[in-house]
Image 1 (cartoon, helix red, strand yellow):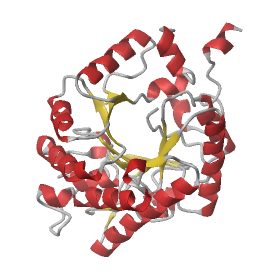
Image 2 (cartoon, helix red, strand yellow):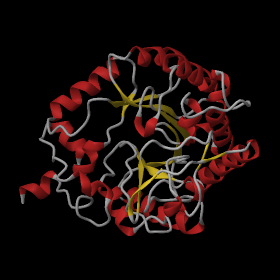
Image 3 (tube, helix red, strand yellow):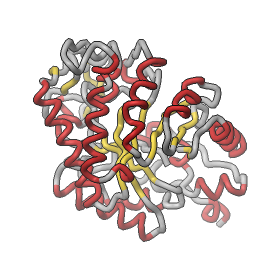
Length: 342
């Protein structure tokens, strides 16, 4: 199960009891990668996003992992720093980024959508302290009962902002040439792996994904360089987001990457057809992926694995708005096959 932000945490970032129910319902997944949790306060993106940098966060996540373990599941936690994707109304702080270039769209806050603010450029000392925050967050995740963590270097958030040419205009060792722009991601992943063990660490990337105003400029060059730099760490997995089975970059990365490769299908949206979903998954496996991560299909189908196994129709997402608002509706009230038959 791919990580999916759902905005059901408490205002202070503590995972709620409702989150424990949600994840326990989906414990049939081979591995749940829990939604993005912030490693520090300034990394918060939106309201009601979980954190993993306070004692209350650890205790809240422990309730979640206990519920999932009791249901027979296992979990990793995604670690995500929003970078410029944030707002003082959400975190109480001015966002930070590789360069002072604002997000070219509004940011959702408790009072509605607000214009993005210009982020403050991270100093080198602050970059180093952010690496340390990722390490502390990873240790906190293990204490909270997670089997490991996924470092989020995708979808336009902080680590991805360092990779992309249009968001990284630095002239120091973290900007400019490819070997400089991959440095921050490499340092975070290496430090986290050294702290909790590489077998507990995954990395998520999203080549050419323009979300959150990202324009990489040199996708075909930067990702092979990044993957090569990390190939010797013996990580748990590399997770590629929304990639097609015909993408030549997938095959190139497969040749470079020696470990487990997880692919998230590009065409796995809101389909109710289990055959279409499994067919694309099979194509990705044939192209070199070892595992498949599904996201949106798990939102409306807590028993997704069983539905795919027997070819049963999938529940449709009833209202996309309910993905990101509080409460059980559109979150924990989707029926299983057994419940639908009653």
